[in-house]
Length: 192
Picture 1 (cartoon, rainbow, N blue to C red):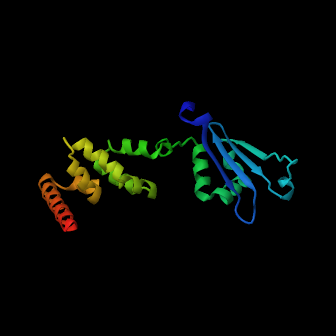
Picture 2: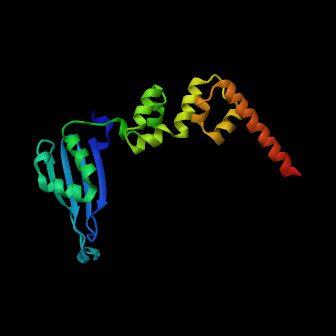
Picture 3: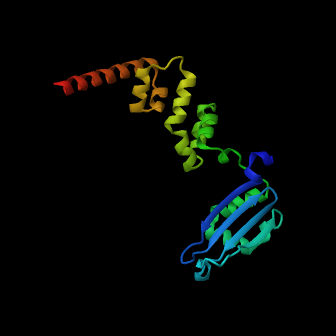
């Protein structure tokens, strides 16, 4: 399982603490522990000869759910959703799919049933955007159609691949013909 994550890290995020603070925070969740690093920023640290080491708090996955001080700091800097996410990771609830890159998620989703894509699109904003993305629907059309003509690609560029997928073949041909005729008509009027 360690090879799935860079350096065995499930999360590695950094953020400046909320205003008015200028302090810097790094939160790392590994397979075994939660690490909270905190750099206190003040005018003294701006001097070239001063080196400031971060303060560090390490908690095992078993101890983190009971450390209320660390909870309040994670929530203050990264928000309530991140705190819930870290708690879930400590309980062993890993979400591998959401950690993948968008292109890889889209490729995997292109093999899903349409009902599953519809359900996934209702889970959150990120998946709603991916499930309605042109890249996903282009993959789906390519996997379901025997041939994709240059005219079809041009038409899909204007109306969208999702529209192309849900239009039956006869309607699609008629719409593409109308689209081409409009294109020819507009290009002929541009020449005059």
